[in-house]
Image (cartoon, rainbow, N blue to C red; front, side, top):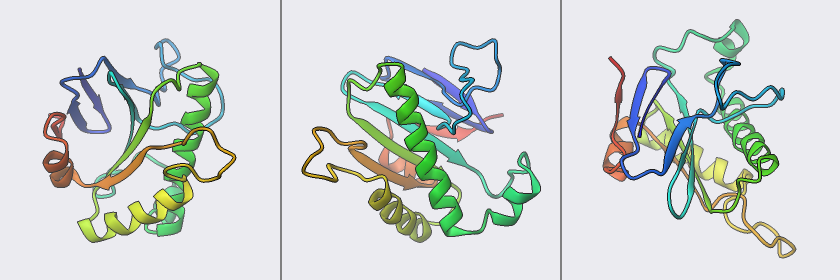
Length: 164
């Protein structure tokens, strides 16, 4: 299951399914007309779903001037990543496809220290694990924020590379 998006190629070798979830082409199966945010990729495995968001700040020029002006803001990025997860969760709820634990992986082009700080802040806001004693289920089982090098080290079954 190879998925190409935003200049990256990820091979989800043991996935049941993997696809671009943030589809912009109306003719494609995973296009969502609702005006909500979405993660870039969803990969389905026997025991879990993996939501993947990619942000390449070294070469990304596809967004508008507001995005370019705010892209260095830690809080802006944290909110963007948080709402992409939450909106995707709502999409999947409406599709009745929340029958497995969800893991969230953000692939960013930052160094490990900044990614670690982002992971801690994002995990606290999602929240990861059961956040309330009234909740019967968790929103996210785990949250990882990694760069390409750390992705390939932590997830060797799912190699990521720059698309040619």
